[in-house]
Amino acid sequence: MASSEKNTYSSTMMHANPDLILDVPATHLNYDMCQIAVFSKPSLIESIPYFFIEKENFHLVRLALGVDGFVIKHLNADIIDREMCVLASKNLRKDSEDIFLSHIPYRFIDRQICLRSVRSNHSNIDYVPLKFMSDEIGKVLTLTNQNTSLAKIPLLTRKNLSQKAS
Image (tube, rainbow, N blue to C red; front, side):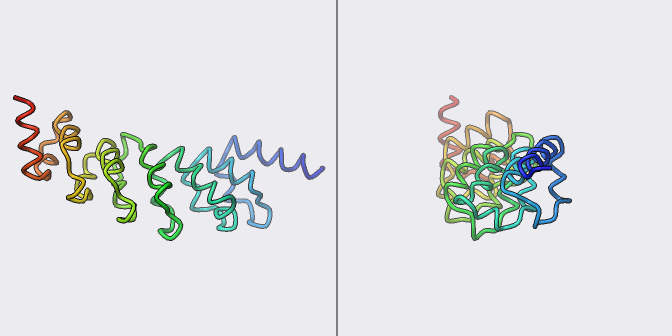
């Protein structure tokens, strides 16, 4: 079997069952196989050898975060940058019980990331720095009747929200 036929066959198998990458010895892996596996099942990023992870400015990481932002919890903090955090925050599942902000290095947390995180899961409010507490975040919580979370918003923001409701 020619090398290109072998790679095509492996790629086809990866599409059908991305978990197969866990059974492929690192010496037999190639970048395309890793890319297919990570796109099909982003959490596999934690099983990809670092040699492939760091290629092309961490393209595999960005690919995984573009599919599922919660993949960020599988990454070493030393490779996470601001762009990855923003990309991840734009791709959060609404039904997740995971706390996204707990996986973001503090220096990368900003107002938009906080807002997206709270929209995804109201429990993220526990990780929102005080300087990013806002009427916008309060509105997200009031629209969903998250009264216990709303109590964590600073008094001034709660007062503004109650005045707007009147």
